[in-house]
Length: 184
Image (cartoon, rainbow, N blue to C red; front, side, top):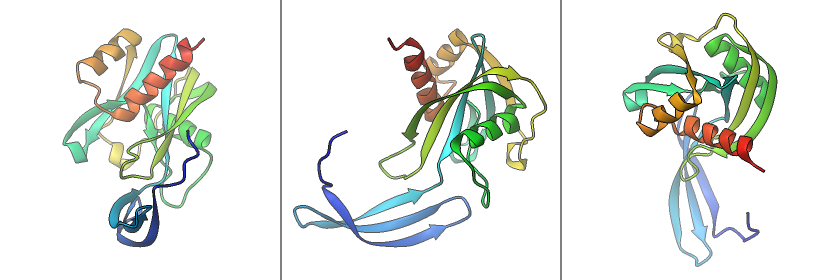
């Protein structure tokens, strides 16, 4: 990261849409050359994603994703519901238990990334969970169609390469886990 001064800064802002999960704002900005413009920003709370792995087997969930009109295999992930909060680790633990029923005896924080930094302020924390113990899931109503599956590393990689896994946060989380695992 460099310590260069910002090339643009906000001179005004207004919220143009908001609900319990997100808001969209229009920011007026000025550049260092004096030119001005408007930038649309989606603000959403950060979320957590869990690379749940036990002895080389990865646990994913699949659900219908309305914005893209199709089902998607993903690592367990999510954010706090409106009115609730806690640490990113507590969120990861809650999402793993809620979506898969698993609890984990070991947790490792891997990275904090941003989902779409060109238009969205939302970030996410990547965790690796091991020493898994099975239990009953407690899915939300919006996750009623969710199923879970267990995959080897070879199967997971094949699913990424053949386009079965299309979720960028899942692919980024797996890539970060791989880099951490193989780093000197």
